[in-house]
Image (tube, rainbow, N blue to C red; front, side, top):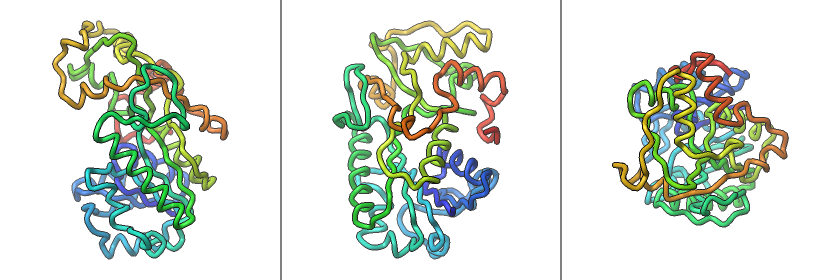
Length: 297
């Protein structure tokens, strides 16, 4: 298996780290030459990609790629790889391609008033960024159908893990307990994103899958649990309505839903961190909560 990860950021590096540790060849792109060493530490061969053109170096790498992971967010001009690959370039550039993964978001469901949603639920995106995700999903589905390559769309909930979690926020003083009546969110450990991508990719499995934990809950509960494990007092609760928030932060609270992961489980995938309590305990007891580059899988 030769995996190419376009956009090897937090999730992409975790995917690459897991696959390279299993003996697979992994390549990944970054916009910054300063970030190349971080990719190498994860077992990923780094490639510079500005989002505007496929360089000769990347073209040479793509010639042997069997698995493509697209983790670059779309913009108002659409998905950057769709623009570059066009109608015919996908298979021309990657003649050995066997499977595609597109990393999307549960934001495509929009607001469902706290009700449960699954992969067959109506998409009702609220924010512009979620509208762009729906359009990107549709574009990848059309491209996969034209080329006959299996496509898995992974809809991710709120991502956290080593180096990016409530412990970090509490330690640097940025944690807040915002309270909005009946508001819940799902979340997902970054290692489970990697595990799901590897599970689906090894099986060349197509389809749409919610990659999310078992327990949607109020966000203030996660902060309180992290504070309990740290042995410190949690920050005071703040009413959402009067809190000072950026427009983007406030927009997240405009979407309220409970996201089901039953479809992925039905295939036989087992989440390593199915709920925030177990996951926070793991991060704290292992001492990996502030170590974004750790290799513990």
